[in-house]
Image 1 (cartoon, rainbow, N blue to C red):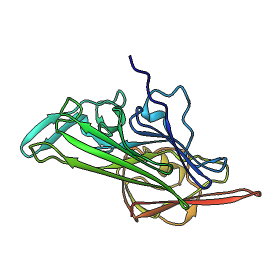
Image 2: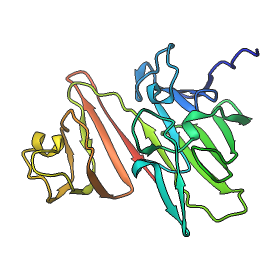
Image 3: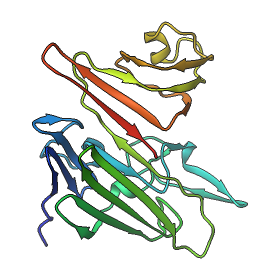
Length: 239
């Protein structure tokens, strides 16, 4: 059995990025100098969900009960992420990706998918990682290689390091669909479930998840860390 390839490391100035093509094309870590921007992945990690960031392709989030209606056909999708009944986060995180380009600060990975129980259509996807003076730029694309028209979407699932004093600038309009007293975020923010909530500006964010909500957001969000010794601010953009 061939030994798995070691992770790939990119460098540019004080930026450093580690990517593991074999672990679902996942990012293992992103550092500015000695400061981790994304959570570092443990060496014992065996699942992309334990990484610093992983790709969501050809869909993100949940497909209810694994049942997808498309062009008059119903497709049953298997969940390869966890034990939920819903199909979750596509197939990109499950499969090894192939290196098609590698330079000091640039890496391109490709995934070729054949129809299976997790996704019934053929497609190809690419991730392009580029380190520059301002940080990491990720470009993701997907191409339908099936004879049939298929629905497709893309996403990326980063885990940023949370520190004491962390603040989040998330210019979103949130539609909370949870029944009263069911949404932990609303409870933490002293808000009433079922209402539209507008969040703007750099602010502290509750330590909880948001399972039953919908979002509208502007293209850029920010994270700030501030201590008596230093301050940093990072932004995430889809442009």
